[in-house]
Amino acid sequence: MVRQKEAKNAALLTAAVILLVSLTYVPDWPAVGVAEGCPLTARFVYPFFHASLLHAVVNAWCLICIVFLYDVSIWRLLTAYIVAVAVPGFLLSDVPTVGLSCVCYFLLGSLIFEVRRKLYFMSCMALYIAVGFLFPSVNALIHLYGYLAGLVVGLLNAPLSCFRIKR
Image (tube, rainbow, N blue to C red; front, side, top):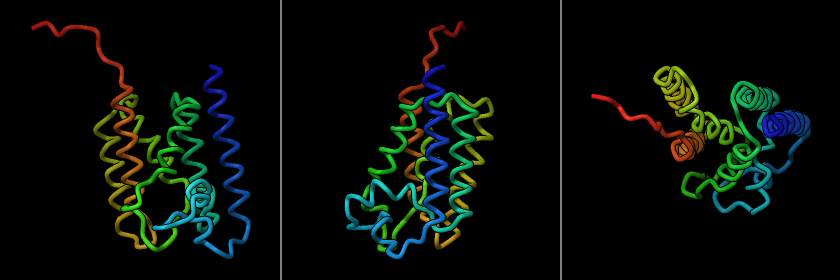
């Protein structure tokens, strides 16, 4: 219960920071966005900056929904942030990328073994990722990377059945 409370508090704080930061004017997007050859500081702050207030609201809402609806621990949140910060350079372009989407997609990918309707969930996620490839301003490769990394972590942490199947 304490871990869930920590994660919920962290999600609410992160959402508040994201919304406050989205209201500030950013004169130099390459300084805060992750891109090929970006400074190390940009890797750590890009999830908190968003291209618009709508982008920030959608990402903050997604984060809060995931944390409040599922058993997300503070450690899973930190792992999602580390995965987002460690995005491989070959997925980046010259245009800076900002947003919390990689963290959200990681969390969604790590939930696959906790949802009841797995096929429906996976179909929705495939659709969301595919739609991202249709818009030129969306870095869908980072979404795909976050989701696949979440799937791997979810698979590694999936509970194993201790019961034998009788034939």
